[in-house]
Length: 126
Image (tube, rainbow, N blue to C red; front, side):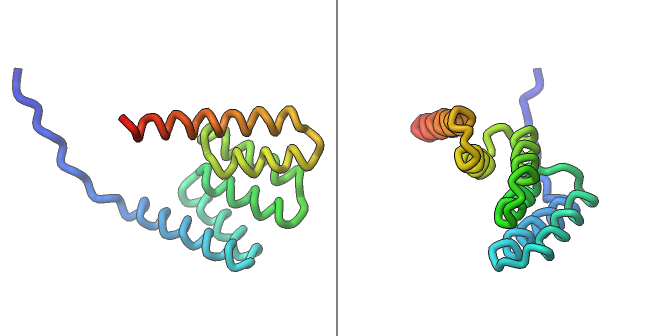
């Protein structure tokens, strides 16, 4: 058996760097209250890079801020489909469900988030 040679770390591709920059830009625009620009940046990201949990989370948050609860819920669910333990999407969808009176649904999401947080915390201890 030949000894294993560790793989050389690869540099991020230009597309990955562009995607990360676009994600950072979406966050800046959303945090500055530039909802329309943030939505356009989200659409651009999805066209260039395909589905991404963080982008669907931002679209959910932007919809939530604009009192478009059904649309927000749909985007949060898409984020969770792609990344089932996306903590921000779990928290915001739980809050949205609670506000709509679905306390059982909200509680399930909160428990899911808590389980994930405990597992991450226990992994860090090891």
